[in-house]
Length: 138
Image (tube, rainbow, N blue to C red; front, side):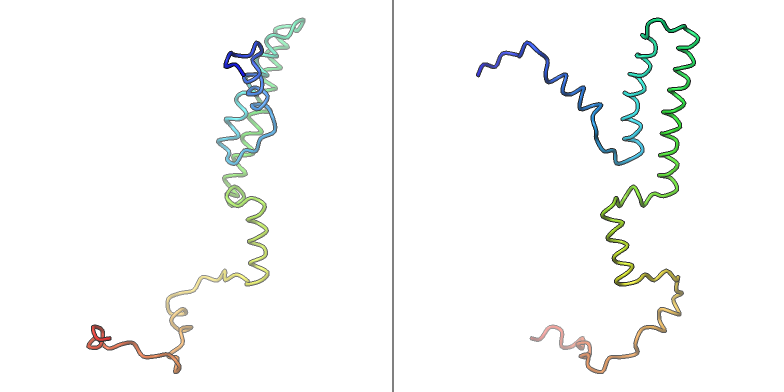
């Protein structure tokens, strides 16, 4: 095969399709970065639309901007009030639910006194700690 460039810019076209294709975003910031190209394309489409009066173009730009900004605001608000949904994902929620059902959760905050009361006094089967004198001897 020759290394000469193709007459059609398939790589550039595929990059454009990948930009607007179905891709997952994992953080609100990545969603905002994903929305910016869509907003730009929508502005260009509205401004280049033939036979549309200028006043209607202005109203369309305001409407499109409002929809995109409201969507971004809702996602950011959701992320602010429920950050565990960002960290875990579906598998993490399923695993957390399974752990709660299997092992239970200890949601009560205990004081140091309550924790000390729960520690057993001694275990008779446990070996005593080594003496300081015997540490160096095998």
